[in-house]
Length: 514
Image 1: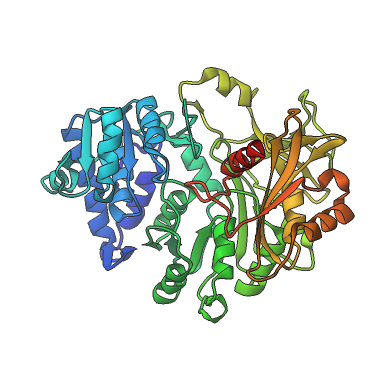
Image 2: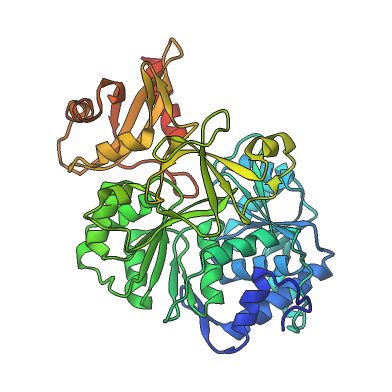
């Protein structure tokens, strides 16, 4: 056994134990490299011992500035094995934002992919750290892989305890004081248990979004289940299709905007995706019209997962629920997971009846421990064992949960509230619209006005008035956008969600100039 602690086994111990039986089995693919289970398992233990030799120990923070490499997963496992907190930076954040996070989480060691060395120099000039460890030879820092090569591969017993903070994950695009979500090893195990599905065939997962986000957790589950993980550095539709065909990929995770890009690629209809058994999507709101297109294109393999870093998993819309005869189902986030309680509450905390809109509140073993060093903010969202998600939604009579909007994204207009996702769904239903994002912009009188950024079908010639007429006819004047801007693509955050903050800033500048 990997761990001497029989009472509690961390997710890392579970994965490493699963790799023990067949050391020659291929478990990770990156470009031309193919990594076997035994080789990977040895690397995790060697790296853990190398970190210990550097004086890094349980309860300290290791921050990763790394891309999608086999070593990235190995280093995370090694740090968790010795009981460290791990913070994996989003690579597309600014240097200033990354430095603020590094400082905030009290980073003991910064572990750097050689491809991010220049950025590492930049951030450590802003925030010096005790140790800079590099995944390979470099002019700065110490080569962690060289240190690890000098260590024995003998299994290192896990030092992590159930209550120890496992990960500190920050909300994307953080500026100023970062909001770090602390999850313990116990909560991570609860999350993995809630999302585990039995598979007859070993899964082959393609990772084409950052390992710092949901893809990393999904990869852990695939490795534990005896599968193989194929790593791409970033999302590129053509490269994704190539990998699906070449590696016979069975499982794929995408944020909705990336799923749309995959469908809209010129070669989409002629590429072979017959090996796909599951396309999981989530992370931000999806368009029912576009999801229906995806079902028609890829078959009955789509699964929507709704959760939050703070809450863990909340609900699941299964492949069977993606029924084109039930468009209302495609609008929902599925049924609440068995291990989760959901209540819909109004502003005073009163539970609302079926069908009424209110804040989605969640109780489960997966809830975060706290926001890192922000007790007031923690107390605001965690009350009496319930997490207040900040999402507005409702439960229907069949137990399906529908997420209507983020509280902060809801636009308050004269006459009521505009739910941005409802308006996006309507705009996306137009045959000449590929994607849209709706957001509020304050005018000179400090009143919010409805704005929309729309990605049209190339060459369609659609104009703003046609869309305004559609909205007025279907939803009334209250929902009609004050401005519609046509764009070639929506800007995305580092995680891959539509960046409404950037769209709002653009609109404010444009209207301020006017």
